[in-house]
Image 1 (tube, rainbow, N blue to C red):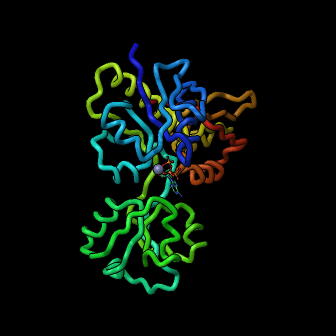
Image 2 (cartoon, rainbow, N blue to C red):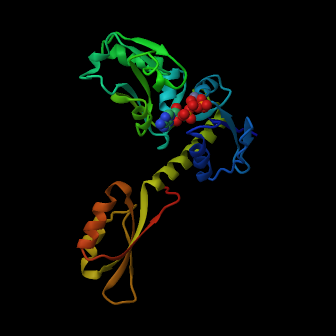
Image 3 (cartoon, rainbow, N blue to C red):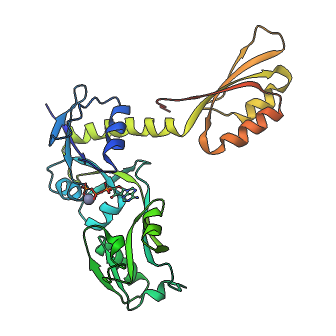
Length: 285
Ligand code: ATP
Ligand code: ZN
């Protein structure tokens, strides 16, 4: 039977969220930390646990059909893969940093400097686009210590909170790339794996959509129902049920996380009471 072979990070920042996403898609994998691969018990899927840097190559070569890696890795590795879907976790940015005391005005100040990085391809492209001549020193880890030991004047590395930079006496001066985890796939999948990939993608989209929305229930005085329903378009239109108490209705709908607090304020201003907000597990439109 055809199986979809999906590569995820063996250990590191993307591992847990990648396993969690598969689980939320209803795919049961027994997480063998020291194993190279494992099979899902209820979906034709095999999971390979690999170093994130190797995943694009394995997918280009067809050793794996799809995988989850940071966009930073996809861009750096320059492999022939399809970028299927952004996944909303593993957010970080690839940034240039210099010493705290450096009087940095613009990227032109990088001219003539040495820049230590594990992302030579992305940095070279950035320098080229901005017409900057600087020396790229490729190192594979602990990039943030390079200025401190006299290896370079600047670095380009992944940042999330910025605390690592701060602890090393550095300040972030340019964001080159905003990155999040991404589902990528082989460009020449045969029919069986392609169908399974579409099935997985359908589930991933339902999970993502559910995370961005909340189910809302509230009580509304009947004379305000029109105004309240206008605030809650929902998936089609809100459900309105009469309460045992005359003159009142219960209204059910779905609201987007982004407009959430604005909507709640408007609902209250229109006389809504007993507002309940509950998470949605899956959402299919
Ligand atoms: P591996 O052993 O698989 O090569 P790694 O050390 O290269 O692991 P991690 O540090 O686990 O990788 O990071 C994996 C990915 O997590 C990064 O490529 C990036 O997409 C994402 N990420 C999110 N936040 C950060 C951060 N603050 N620093 C580094 N990576 C981050
Ligand atoms: Zn890595």
